[in-house]
Amino acid sequence: MDKILKDSKKSLEFVYDFYLKMKKNNINLAYEGEITHQITKAFTSLTENNMIRDEDYSSVQKKVFHVMVECLQNISKHADNQFNFVSSKDGRGIFLVSKDEAEYNVTTGNVVKNEKIDELNKMLEHINQLDRVNLNILYKQKIKEGRLSEKGGAGLGFIDIARKTGQKLVYSFVKIDEEKSFFVLTSTISRLKDAK
Amino acid sequence: MLQPIKIQGTDDTPKVILDPTPGNPIFEISGRSLPEDVVAFYEPILEWLDEYTGEPLEKTIFDFKLEYFNTASSKLLLDVLLKLEDMYDDGHDVLVRWHYPEDDEDMEEAGEEYADIVEVPFEQVSYEVD
Image (cartoon, rainbow over all chains, first blue to last red):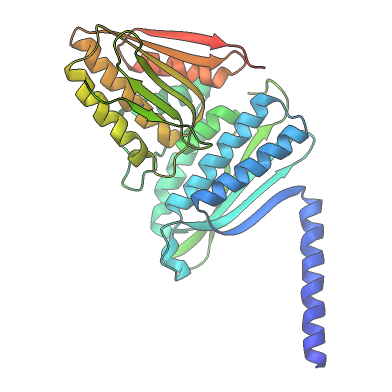
């Protein structure tokens, strides 16, 4: 009996600790699990309502909406699911939205195979080196040449996030084991009106 | 005559009207586009346009009035525009009107981008939002 009490106390402490950490980091939304189309719709509409309530500029609202959609679709289409021992068509990952006075941050994390890291890394580095004009050129080139990949992904998401937010993509790969890593990506959207 | 397509808009799919009724033709894609299966959504539209291209009206005015579209939709929208380009290449009269909210630079730029990519008469139209 003592052990059960102790365990449940621990779990309550964990919840409170988790709550404090969310508050401290200004996290408005945190989720771990499958990213389905329904989840994407629910999160974007929830965040949209909050932004309307907080009277964010409509240009900011649109950018946040856009970044959320692209980030969620990246997980849903590209997370490597086979490590989760579930056969689902939708990818799994963690999804966070935080905000302070100056900006919104949209963070995603998902498992990727190590063999994919090189290519992903190169793509993101390349995007981060480009200015707005060159991002536009790259976008146009990709949209013209690329047919949809078999998963329906466009590879355009990262480019579009970079040019719409005007900020560098912040990302890292945390090695899990020989086979896979955890890919974390944060996009930042300024809450100022004409921030590019 | 080709049967018109009329699709009601939802919070993640656009309203689509493809109606070649002489005297009152409407060609329009408007609203939000982030369908769960973007290819499945646009396929019937592209097929319809393929058929229409064979025997189009004397003049086809195609209105895009999108509030939002995701990058997955952007390629399919380009496919729609490329069909209109084909029609124009075949000597038909085609005009694309790209409507954007006057305060939405990103949507305005998206129109400019498409206008750069496809060779078809292209008009940018800004509208007021309340």
